[in-house]
Image (cartoon, rainbow over all chains, first blue to last red; front, side, top):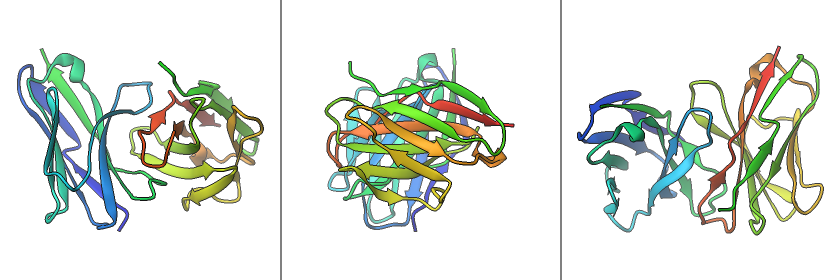
Length: 112
Length: 113
């Protein structure tokens, strides 16, 4: 019930391409869905987040698409750049916000 | 920009030894957390702390673990008798309110030999 499943495990994209990472959850009490970016040796940093009252949120080149009925959400990185190469984690939490449940992570490599 | 700071950045210890990992959360934040990440794996929740008490803990956070906020600024994670499987990166995090953005520190890498 608490799991968040993330795919793919790794992703290689050419510069300028679109990177798409998918996540699925089971717990219907989840109501906050952030994406974190992690560079090697660093802590996760919030990239973008969405609540289930909207189906899409866009910030610059990053877009979250949210499908409440399917219990799925995805991160789209437009015009991917080599500097985007990092590990991306989706996460979810309920209204209490006490515990973030993370997906398994996606290692993104953007080739120049 | 305010940040969560953690010390030490790397600690090597012998199995069975006690370890204390220290964190200084962002100064006006009220909610504090510890997460861990075993190499190459996902980030896992350990414990949350608010108003000087544990608000939630995971099944990982057993009797060997404890947290404390000994003064107004530090937040510590103690592992009483370390095991090999405790080797991981430990992240401290904090937020102002329970629905606000969660800010992570850079982590403390613990290696248990």
